[in-house]
Image 1 (tube, rainbow, N blue to C red):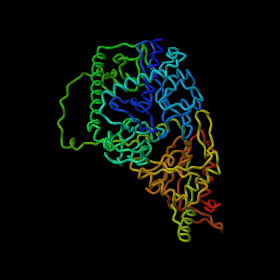
Image 2 (tube, rainbow, N blue to C red; image 1 turned 60 degrees about the horizontal axis):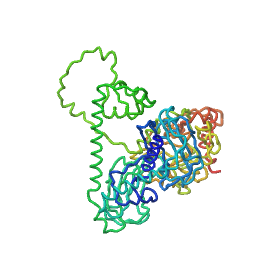
Image 3 (cartoon, helix red, strand yellow; image 1 turned 180 degrees about the vertical axis):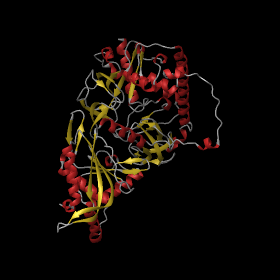
Image 4 (cartoon, helix red, strand yellow; image 1 turned 120 degrees about the vertical axis):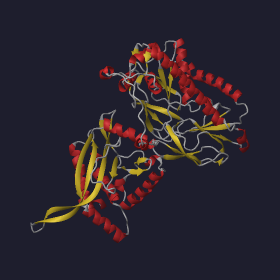
Length: 603
């Protein structure tokens, strides 16, 4: 029974931490939550809840129903990709969840083993935050999880929430009814964001659909629209706030303008002060851990993640302190030691033999003073780009093929459109059309690799992603059904999407998806380069600039003469699991034919 009570407590923590705001009376769409006199400093927001027990229950993680779309407040379990007992790696799809928009994959943020499925396949209307599964770090710990979870699971969290809500009510009895706005999840992969700009200021009237602020996500800068009317009473996350977790309070709204003055002016400062106190206590704990660590501790087991971190940082295992059940050294123990500096790196034999001498600090010369630097913060977009590019190069077998295409027919056709039809199209617009037609004629190139099925899946439409350089990073807006659109339609759409991308105004549907990418650096100018595939796509075409070269051409009279022609180098980066040599060759051949016989694109 002790184990079951501990597990129920863990489930209650998981449920309360995942709902969005732990102390609330009613739940509203998105992250707009109606709260009666809460203590904002007590709000915690997690995608997963890690629970420990002193009663013998192993360390475990309660997975809650995630918010996979901005408007999602409940979902259905369409399919479990993992079964109980399966190993889970970081990034593995655990299950498929049917949201209010589509059926999406729920990826794990930590490694471990699936110990218990709480919401079986086919479960309907599971609220966001409601526990759906339990994972453990060690395979042997699965048997310690009770086989049956009592029905009390649903009542226990409500009891805890009710008690804490009553305590908060007493502490804030002078606050009027209000709503706490949390950082919304504006994309499926977003777990934190930056406040780029506040469109409303404190005291402003807010109507349904009004844009409250602009939020920089991992994809773009998007607008946060309010779902209810009221007045903006307090901004908790000021303009420029970085790495604000999804669900963390960013503002407070009231229904009556007279209630604005009743909101304490220092409510945000009180929250920050309590967070600083918590941080100070954590630092003190780390210092105590450092003191204990210096005396040396022992542990009986090491988690796989902890082993990798110890090897990566070259740490001395005997000086690390274990906090897991039954003396298990966890990944968090190693990360805490690295962060606080309470560790000693393994010294190489050569370092041990060298005598230690005290060196006097060198005097700072004028040249040294000039060697200064400045750390420039990365945007969320650049962080995601860096992560995805590394994943692509490490997990996707890149196949590279290059081909020179004759550019003269294209240039002549472009000049004719301008002079006779007053239609201005760029070389890149014609390249998009040529690539789209080549993909339509070579269906094997318009596909992606499905890791679960272990096979290539053909795409139903030809959607071309075009790389656009912005100040915040590279964006890839999409020309959908490009093979069916005219050159004029493609040209106008490219201009519109590129302008939105540079302004950070792209909507999610305008950059999510795509079946093939094009990256054109010819205008910079670049002759030749190899691009990196953008998963889950299987191909990207790198386009260089056009160069005039002299070639020997045989005339109609059979005499060989020198002739100046314009050529452009194209380089295909292809996923070798989807493209074999023949498929890639057929695609480039078809593409070259579109350039040499420009009339093919008018058919």
